[in-house]
Amino acid sequence: MVNNIKTVFSIKDLENLSGIKAHTIRIWEKRYDILQPIRTDTNIRTYDSASLQKLLNITLLNSYGYKISRISELSTEKIALLVREIISEKSSKNHALNAFKMAMVSFDQALFFNTYNSLLSEKSFRDVFYDVFIPLMNEIGLLWQSGTISPAQEHFISYLIKQKLLINTEKVQILEPTRSDKIFVLYLPENEIHELGLMYLNYEILLNGYKTIYLGESVPIDSLKDMKKYFDNIVYVSYFTVQPTKDSIDDYLKEISTEIIDANSQFWLLGKMTQFIDNEKLPKTISVFNSISNLVSVL
Image (cartoon, rainbow, N blue to C red; front, side):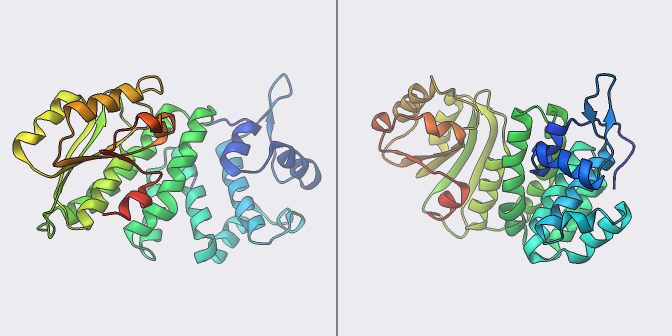
């Protein structure tokens, strides 16, 4: 499923995308001739999308027990066929992750949709998100930080996941809430645009029978004050991925505590930046969760 997009990868990119060390890839090349790199004028290895696809397939077969010496005797077509034949519950997660990464680097919407639909034929959307999308998003973050993928590739795959989230959220959003002891207001702070985690929390909270007010990304604190004019027993939920910064997060939470939180409200928080919170300064009205599943468990 590799299209005509011209993408060139370094051996380090292949290591990051496949999880196979560059040293091992070189040994496999030299000993078994599994990949044929293109060499630059300065003798640096580069690889095309077809090489990446083949390596991802080889990685799956190898994790399933196939020896590299045996795999090396197979054609690229036979390797792909074997992958399709052996996909099971045990290996479908890794196969889907590889397929989604391949769809991302080659901007291949059809591959994304085919992989997603195949997963959905066996799993619930909730299982797909926990088992595949959350690990995928974690990998995407590392791939972006290492320079393996571009911001365009990250935005491409994130948008496709958002589409699936919105479709499934609408299905539960149209149902009448069954619980009214609290209402959830979900938002991201100013200059925070990483929305997927918060969007999934919105889906989970709706699924648990609560009404939600989803405000989305980059919301100033002043806008949160308005919520108290309309609702009681509010639980504010936010996801800090890059904002506030580690130097400003304690001051931000202090402002939230004094300006937003009252006797009838709570503040629930998760995300990468929470590691920089000074717990001794954390107000009792603010609860920090270390994962989406941890938060969902208290609903």
